[in-house]
Amino acid sequence: MRLIFFGTPDYVIPILDKLHKYHEIVAVVTQSPKPVGRDKIITYSAVDSWAYKKDIKILSELDIKRFPKADMGVCASFGMIIPKVIINNFKFGILNIHPSLLPEFRGASPIQATIIAGSDPAISIIKMDEKMDHGPIVSSFKSEVLSNDTFETLRVRLFEQASEFLINLISNYSKGKIHLKPQDENLATYTKIISRQDGFVDLAKDDPIIIERKHRAYMPWPGIWTLVNGKRLKILEFKNEPVTVQLEGKKPISYKQFVTSQFLTS
Image (cartoon, rainbow, N blue to C red):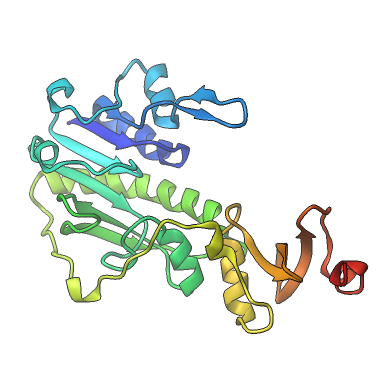
């Protein structure tokens, strides 16, 4: 089957590898190269680099006139809204891979929300429509959260699992063997783009279980932090209580050192 892949970051590469093994990827659509870091070095996306090495057509604009003929699109962490005119250009539409059990945790931060809620992580594969994470469900599966999972480790594992799951799914879907299930809008919940402020915790009031989950969900960014005498205190390690902390402008120290030190009064 001729496929066009929509995606950008490194953790979706296992999906590309698996699709490339069993299907013909005629193009990838990925975000344009961007200046990165203090030196503003122009950096290409992981999907762009993957396609370049394999001599596959690379598109950075949603211009349907430049799209080669393809039977289906597959989308994973693309980062842009795909218009209806492009979705409808494919005989089998576009399958979108979303890391939650839709309609729960639609939006930008489903994995972080899953960890904080203590829910089972999952992958849903939907037939995309013009609304965000809204289309009918083709299939889904649940996974598990390990006790030491962070946002990044869980994300990598979920997309690796999705790559295996997708291959059989595409075959059955294209042959009309799968009955699509509309999402129940009454059960829909939404997530947002994470901000630095979301990492704030109140050590005196917040449940240590929730703080620990936030610590894993927001690693490496924005991390969790609190305020002490008006200064930001980063909590670098948390196990039932802070283990390692770093006051702004200072070096990391143990929390026990911190509470018995001059930092509390300085």
